[in-house]
Image (cartoon, rainbow, N blue to C red; front, side):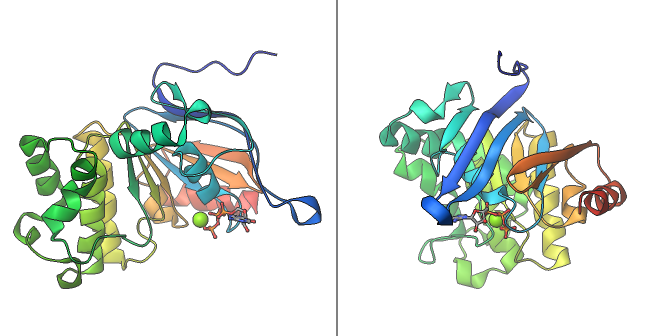
Length: 247
Ligand SMILES: Nc1ncnc2c1ncn2[C@@H]1O[C@H](COP(=O)(O)OP(=O)(O)OP(=O)(O)O)[C@@H](O)[C@H]1O
Ligand SMILES: [Mg+2]
């Protein structure tokens, strides 16, 4: 049987993705055969109960972890065939990450944190794009501050800017608002959505929050390591209905 065809508007996809942890009786099948497409220039949310495999899927899609079976293609390249070196290069130059913990370097200023991935990859900073990203996150007057001098929401906006400054093919965000109050969440979500609408980014975001997921173009639902549903143009209401139906 041929695998499901992939449309050109897909920036990243997985086919038959399996990830197991451990061996013998303690084996956990975190991903149990996932076929999923993530659209270019769209925001896709991933939802599902704790332990359903959301982070594992993100890590396998983003080359942070190797799948046990199946294939992952990001921006046209099969990442299962890449060496560790190629994977590192892919992560540094073509992917952006936002985690629940902001993971900023405490001794660097906001501006230095934002350009750090480019500096590590020895790539030049496109000043116009840097300015556009900084304006979009609304941090123009905070660039010389260190993380300890910023609120949680501001720190996460720095992390978002860091993920976007290299114009990655796709940004993976794992519960980016998980540590934030509702006001800061709104700021970060607004920014992620604008990065799609105004900067043409492709974003994949894991969240437990129906309000957060409602800013996405599409929500995919995981359960026990499988894709169990999806919603297009979701609202918080339709997401809650879907979650109720799935549980
Ligand atoms: N490094 C690991 N070693 C062993 N088991 C793991 C490992 N990482 C994840 N798992 C298991 O894989 C399953 C999926 O975990 P995962 O972290 O992907 O869930 P999740 O959907 O992100 O959950 P949460 O909403 O709590 O973050 C869980 O049963 C988890 O215990
Ligand atoms: Mg998780």
